[in-house]
Length: 352
Image (cartoon, rainbow, N blue to C red; front, side, top):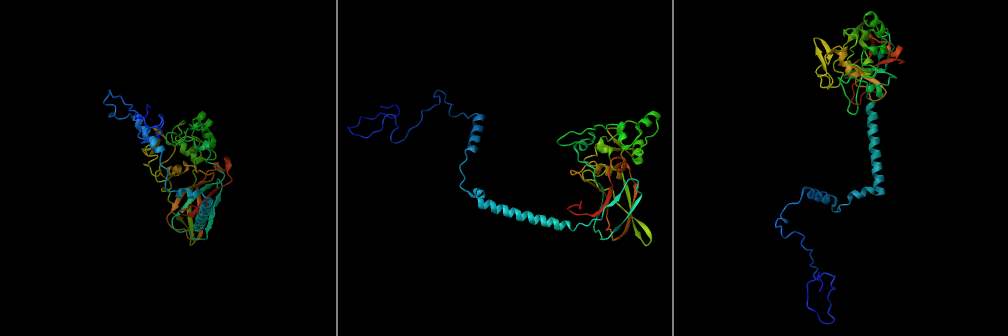
């Protein structure tokens, strides 16, 4: 008899029975017990952690075939054509809506000026309702270049995917880039003189040090310092218009106790300090303008918010006075012009 089949009596001649290497007809075949009969705990002990993990992974990988075949419908040519047509219609509708919405943006013509200009007159033909935003533009200044974006003070900022450092602008020796006569000051011990940027020289001289330059870096060294005063002509007189310069930075940047700079740039006895060193920044509006400048745009188009006007700008005659107008951008750094733009606050921003 076969070792795999149970022993049976010898059948009669011509009887039909399975060969010895097949299991019995009942198909009731079981593998022999592989456990150790000497160890009664073999069947009761739990499997190891690796075995359980393998079982989970194997069970997940060997999932049953889905009974719902709707997802496969997307791979049919007719379905793909239908999806492409629907997507095209959707994007055309969104584009038409954006173009229509952008047409409602009211913006003045740019007021173009050069370094050294005192004032510029302009006319507003269409009323600008709501909150009016005052921007300055620097055409041709590529502030989004890598060597500028990463050239910041590591004591006050950092980047997610890179490191910042003050390369070639770590102390006041680098201020020659802003037409400052560093060598003469070092030889004679006189105050710093910047021929094309006296307002910047005044900020550095207020520090009281010939070395400390905080915040450092090329981006800080190129800070925009121009200031404006807006007036409207009414009944033969020029009436000042209040421009708010406090609410111009991002919400987590704004204020002396901001989330970003509050623990890094400290107000101490009326002066700003960085890690115990006196900063050339001044508290107030100049500090807020620096926060806007210190976030360069991702595009090669510099257009930064300078202030806001809470009242509408009615049609009429206006003039902007440049109370601070640095020559450095146009005379030294090669920009053709600087601009001031007035626009209505809009969810899509401005036309620029």
